[in-house]
Image (cartoon, rainbow, N blue to C red):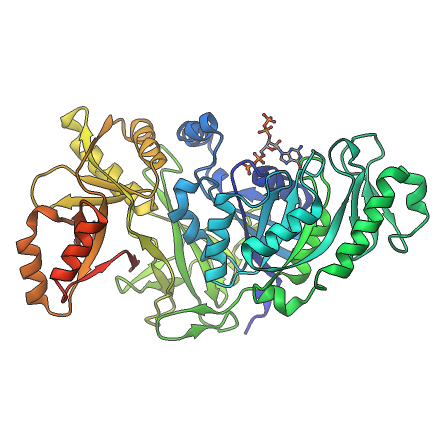
Length: 524
Ligand code: G4P
């Protein structure tokens, strides 16, 4: 039994767009001497350009639409940082990424506080009891009063808050940050510069501070920090790990403030890989046999080869390159002869992976989101939802001779979780379902860049899509036959009922008590 997994810290950053997630990610990677980004897998020149091609949309709109895995070592621990797309339209992908982490960093803009996307992502973390550390970013700018931010987190998210690092001035008065746990003052040797100086103090009343910070800033800071320490609950590891308490660190990702306390906290206190819930039992990371699940599939990382990479989070055992694992859904054994490790700096460690790590499995469409891999046991990890789409459109193809390419594009993107594809029982045009409107633009853009197809959309009179199920197959068939106009099939040929309004859905539900209408279905 290997205990290597205890050194793993697998986490994600959740935030509202613009709060500073990208900047913080970069700074964490720099501090940890980053190894490699998943986006750079197989980065032959052309491939890299291809990837940035379809990321054009991200640049134009200043949002991040892909998630990736970044691994770095810090203080004897291996940190796996799973990036989550920052835009609210990509919730499905993001939700799935959050099923693969053990903890999260929540980044908040000091001037804006808790924003809509932060709240949504937080709710997902809460559902899964994922512990969260909060980073209040941009204290070098004019922001809200620190107490106001602390109280907002406490009230809006119903969490206990513990101040760990407190700002020394804000905006034009910003002088640095004070680490309340270790009594260290972080400042800059240059007026308004980035963090480069650390001063060990005996406490908030240390006289060194009087020489370094103008009294008009120091005195209120001392008073407030003391009040904060006395007024908010003390840090409690169990409470944090159970998701009831969030430690709060004020800092500036741009100016390097509080990156060290943040990463130190993660390696010291964030949980090691936790047990994973499968349908039949809970799987402990310390178990000997390897198991893992796929939380993401990325198509076309290399434009020249229609490859896909499936991202597998390891849940137990010691993974070795070349081993055979059973894909539980199909019952097939798959040899892992060319897994991609995101720990690619050092080839020797790269041949093994431990629970908490993420492995890329190149494949040609045979591996799906939600797949479980094991050394033989018929396990099925739970908790990977597929969401009912909120926007439905019929797809129109510009050049009808490219129908084959359209089919592969839709299949590939459905595989990635970008869209859901439905085939009507009557008529021949595909219907796509998305959670946010931006996904339609991404689909059109990537269709053009990667499959050379021109896609446009037509509205359809339906608003809601629900999977239908019944215990009695005869009753199900009767329902499907009677409602042929409203029935489509998903890519696994499961029937889906389209309704024009919540009213219609309610009405149909009441009329058909033997049929279940499902908003999500667990992937299988
Ligand atoms: P995101 O991934 O969460 O969307 O945020 P990102 O890191 O891209 O940061 C959004 C903007 O906020 C960036 O400005 C970034 O430089 C700025 N920013 C991030 N951290 C800090 C910080 O600690 N202090 C200050 N003052 N700014 C910060 P931008 O994209 O460069 O916009 P622009 O200002 O260049 O137009």
